[in-house]
Amino acid sequence: MSLFLSRLRIGVRRSSSVSLLICNGFSTSLRQSPPGFVIAARFCGHDHARLTVCYANQRGLTDLDKRVPMNLVYPHIHNDDKSQTIGASHGWIATLKDDGILRLQDDLNPSASDTNPKRIPLPPLVTLPHCQTKIITNVSMSSSSPEDDEDCVVAVKFLGPQLSFCRPAESKPEWTSIKLENPCFHSSRVMFSKKDSVFRILGCEDHIIASCGLFSKSTLWSDGTRRQSR
Image 1 (cartoon, rainbow, N blue to C red):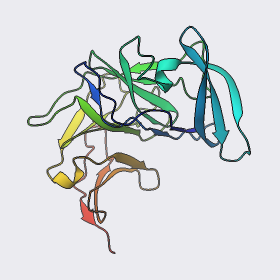
Image 2: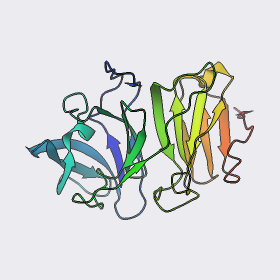
Image 3: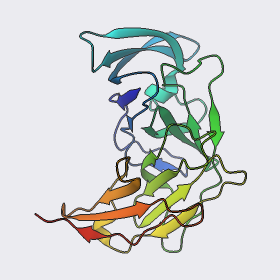
Image 4: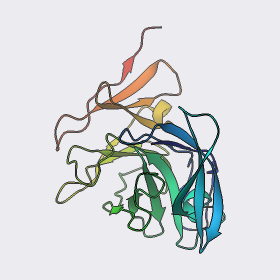
């Protein structure tokens, strides 16, 4: 299911050591559900809510019976576990706690179980020299199966030059990070192109794109900054 988390605020900053720059997430899962918007969350007790969704192929709204943690929808109101929702991709929500561990959760996927939601912790973030990993711009994924697809890559774009990648399904996952020297990419978001099997970052000048190819488990980055013809 495609979920645009329209209720998540932009620019949320907490007093903890981990801060959020952009938390509006666009989530795409091609498995069971059509694209749609999360319109609202209806409180149903015990810090949980039921979602109201607008599917792209239907008229009107759909009320889901599935229960989801309230803090995933309204993190600035309900944040008892001190986690932040930092983005969404392929039906998965990316959250970050004070411990610096990024986790993938499938709570907002209507087809996923609400009694046994999946949680995938990623390795501790590693900060490159002269970079920072406390403010995250967004998260993107190459597929919807981070738990069992060893080719699935999670990309995390931080405010500034650092861009980091991880393959969660590997036996010993670790981060591979690169430094984007061109400052026009420092505040940009990372996106995945399924057609070309690459991650792309659009620079502040709209004719400059950085491309990252998925060539092997050990080689993630393609020196692919290029100019598009106008």
